Length: 259
Image (cartoon, rainbow, N blue to C red; front, side):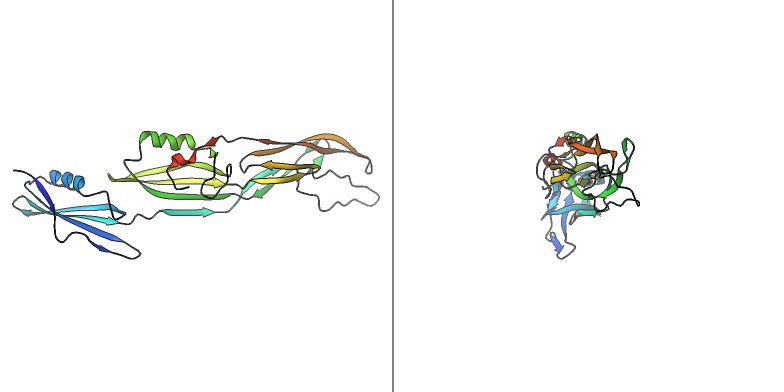
């Protein structure tokens, strides 16, 4: 006997508002095998209906190889989290020395912004710098989560954006990786993790001016021995600054997210 599936007149009921839902209803005839019913129902009912994702699939035998079936659809809302707790960075050079104080009878040397100068060392200090951490969780169709897509996520981890992405300029956004869980047969729940650090321009360190660096590049300062003649002491003077690329660039369009 031929197995048939037909959509019923009661199909396509739904609800609008904050929680959009829809239901497609079918009648299947010609088999008493529930596995055949389930397979045929999944092959017939679309994965998405009016931008709603397919959810629960239900089927009930009515006797005589007839089945009453329904497929539920609901909105798949993406989720977003963020924090601006900042990150820690070790710096050896201040943005500017705002006060110098000496003991009576002494002249304090001017270290030109070098922090924690002792003998032949510049100790520096740890500071909090702006870092914007955020996650996005999306539901991705199983057909799109191929082995190549998983490899793209893997190889993009630890890279910075090579072009503007999600409002961040080139070099400001670091991809920290993704984690995914398959939900049934239709889609994956994937969480993407990012950290953003702002680009800076026209930075001045001591007498060094015009320094430009991208958010995730590393800046370090070279010092040389000099003499503060007024204080009659040796000092460490910044003579050059270096901006290093420590994270490679990546093409974030491969993530499959809207930029």
